[in-house]
Figure 1 (cartoon, rainbow, N blue to C red):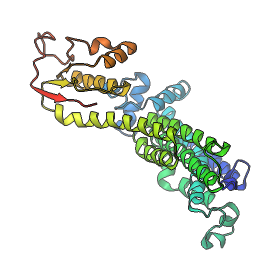
Figure 2 (figure 1 turned 90 degrees about the vertical axis):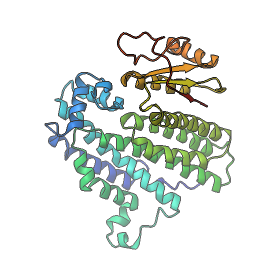
Figure 3 (figure 1 turned 180 degrees about the vertical axis):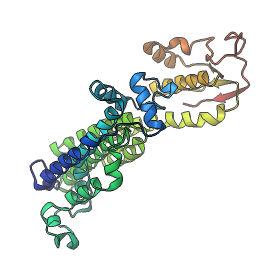
Length: 348
């Protein structure tokens, strides 16, 4: 089986070009890290380094937990602005390898990785390095990419991890299609390796979302495409898991306008037959929102299976009989303030 990504493997000319580009990028940023906080978001990030509390905008929701954890580590030796900006510079430099693999995978899927276009061949450097390396250099030297990496923000770090997830997932697609074109069986070593890359890509997508929730828009469509590109029960199971996660998120957003302006809500769960931890997370998030907005939410007919999951998670008391959300007015008991003004049925 032909290795379509051989021109960008470790040790190749393109790989060494990416390594040199990463070094130049890093050296061009470390001496010039931000020394001050530039806007409200960066101030929120700095406050989060002192006391992580997204509910108080330390930093602003959803909290960027992975980025803040790295920021706290760097803050042990660097000032707050530089501790935040350091990771943008470092991840921006490392993104050279992700971009190189990503552009190579695009070319491989297009079926023409080895032959540069005539315009690049005339420059010789393009012919010698190949299109992926040239595209990587152009991307990293773009003013927006270069300048953003110096800011005390999560933008570049989140983008770099998202690019890594995309590169891994597209590499899996290249391997899968190469195995299929070679006539390999789904149980062949190449096909198994492709499946493992899909799992790794899914993990990296989750990490990207931990840096910035906007990473979901960059990684989840590619993850879905990689899963659909495969065949078999494993792909179906992974797709179902993605749909379950997406359903819970959709219901969370759909509940916002339903709850708006309602001082009290009853969520009827009596018709719910299938539940999982995503459903429990959805109910707990509704409770959290109600508490923050001084509203009352009551769950009626909580399924035994959901209570069992809550019991294992140590939150059974939040869903048990007689519990109402804590957004209660002063001087009112839970029971006296639970009279619902409207009802909402859930089919989750």
